[in-house]
Length: 76
View 1: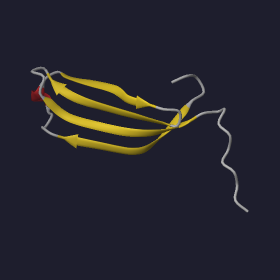
View 2 (view 1 turned 120 degrees about the vertical axis):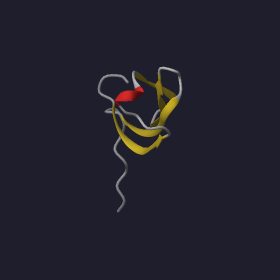
View 3 (view 1 turned 60 degrees about the horizontal axis):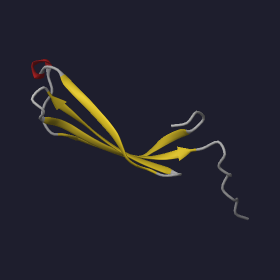
View 4 (view 1 turned 180 degrees about the vertical axis):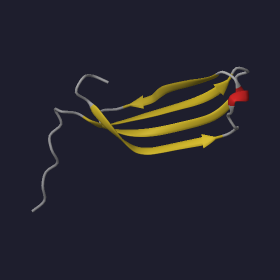
């Protein structure tokens, strides 16, 4: 994200598919943005073992907070 842009989580989902322990060995986490808009960004990720088996998945929706955004209009 550009400097000055913040975010907050709107939704987070994590699925643990297999146990992870010291015996699992090396694990690798991958994350990617699936869609990025002006006010929200959607991201996914997974954790895999050395054999490529998926151990966990996650998805998130984030609200982007831009410093140049006008504040919402107040209601009377």
